[in-house]
Image (cartoon, rainbow, N blue to C red; front, top):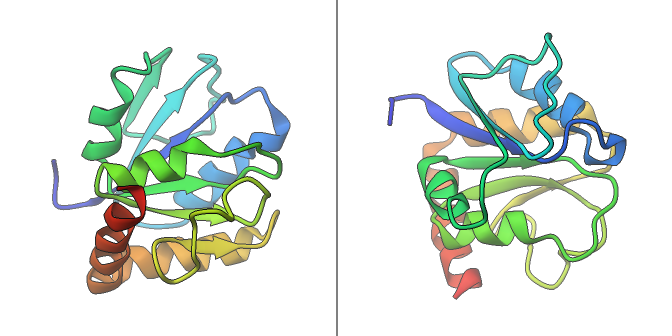
Length: 150
């Protein structure tokens, strides 16, 4: 792992409501981070900038990827029960997540993750920037995330 905060973006790039394009726009505005992308459908736009792209990852390999990253950037507008933020918490990370339905059972804003409004690119940028710049906040959210997951 490098000295840079590692941000994970995951999901199918071809599914509009997953907002992968927005996640890359947000992450692209933050200097000096490392971005990993799990492209579940293998789709990558040329303008998306990442340090590592992982296509077609098995469910068995995902825990190691989550554990290798610090922050999950999950900006979907629609989800059912959303496992990725919870899985990220179980592996010691935290997340910036939009207020879609499906995670209200376990995500608490400012306790174990940061929540932003759906399609609020500026809010997502500010939340991610805050986590990058505030190591203490990131650590506290991560600790509480582990407690949430267990």
